[in-house]
Image (cartoon, rainbow, N blue to C red):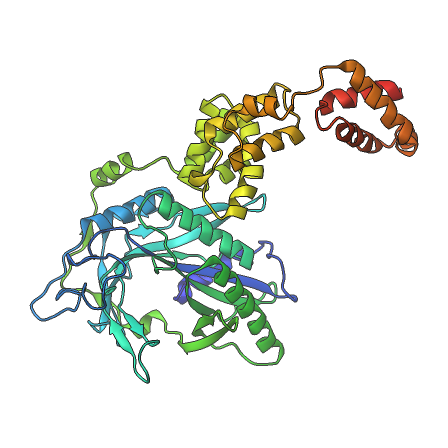
Length: 498
């Protein structure tokens, strides 16, 4: 937030609220500005292509360069994507918003100004909710406004000089601005991941951080609990979640050390160097007055009628928040489990297909967020590339639910499906002889042997230590090769031990 009114309002809202986790006795305050490149084929005010990877300066037309006699024309697709974001985040979509010229000089800003929105943005308010561990968090949004991107300065390939590539000039962006509601690096990264999920889910941005389609600026300050807001420094252009965490952590430590050494924090824009793991000042941070905003005389106000919003709404996919609520209501899942299953459309689709194939929803959820997630992370692939298909997981889950497969045996079947040893769950069970023990006499013999060999556990259980029974159950499962039913074993042991 760049104006004093917003800061004072924020301070008033914070009265009586608990602080976040303290770092060396300091409270951390973080706000975000995220630039999401909109997924249009052409630029925001011209017909030039937005395709990534073209030769430098081959996709900058006369309009992008503001050559004499050219006029910008609004891209309807960019506006519709802004409407989609507002609908997804519960924001107010302004029926009338205004474009302004933001004046500053950069070599890669061909017009000498950037067309953006200032006093009346197209998307106002809203919120992003997410889980940090199992704790639900909500970050409030100030606004999201449409604007054009600048070009790019290239330094690596020119000895003692810089090159300018204007292909990005005029690329449509939504700048999404939060209140300074985040209180830790973990919370900030979780927010960024959730926002990334939302913009890709509704199809307004491809989310490719390496190509600059989703870039985050983090405003970071620290203060002693109860004191006024500290001076913030803005970390620009964070284009990976890993670097985001490292940059914010370093900035927090640096500011605390500066304050404790008796130096004042100066408002500034900084860059993060992943090679050194440090932030460094790029320039003194400007405020809104420094940009001399004024309404763009070449663009009329953007008017969005109510029926346009309704048409866009009708074409929206089911949102992750609504889908998670449906999983809680229809399948009895916890909010946390439902949120985990709606991390991407493909993951939710996989869960839906498993349930439609007969899997118990809770068991399917446990396997997808547990064993499946572990395998996917290790292989660094998405659910759409998983060797175990949804119908196969459903078949596996059904065999767990009907008592055919104890957990240990089920993991063996999953391993066989994953590695391609087999494709049919029942056939794998037969081939590996994983059916539960049907011979009660053989199981009774194993129980007696385990009791005889584990006198200490038996004594502790009879002395009132319930946990001692778990050790005995484990020994029986081991002796049976995992074929015994754990629930049956537990009941039989309790009977034998009186």
